[in-house]
Figure 1 (cartoon, protein in one colour):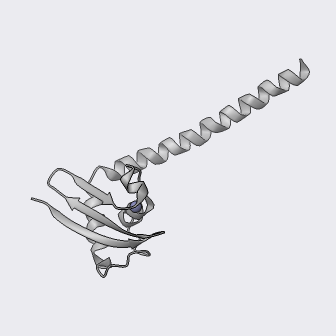
Figure 2 (cartoon, rainbow, N blue to C red; figure 1 turned 90 degrees about the horizontal axis):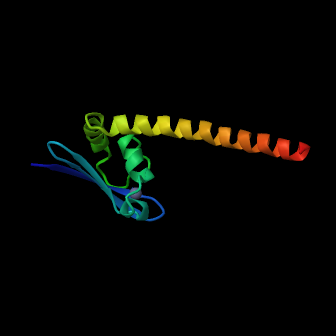
Figure 3 (cartoon, rainbow, N blue to C red; figure 1 turned 135 degrees about the vertical axis):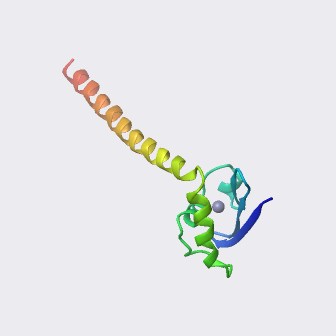
Length: 110
Ligand SMILES: [Zn+2]
């Protein structure tokens, strides 16, 4: 048994975002190019975060329901984890830049 809620979203084109809620899984599809490439696109991310700005279908009020599905799913955890990773990434990139500068300094003195 599954429940489906679909939204039309205006991006650089008109896309369709489908939320398919089954007992053990929440599947979210988007028809945009990024969505087809298994990338997290902003159309899905926006709706998952309750942002209705670009929705052109007349069911904006269903975003609340979809957001409840999201809240009950593993996505929140994964988004938190992603945020942590992005912070780590920034820190590591800074370390890389600092180390390169350090090496360059030694080269100049060498
Ligand atoms: Zn998309």
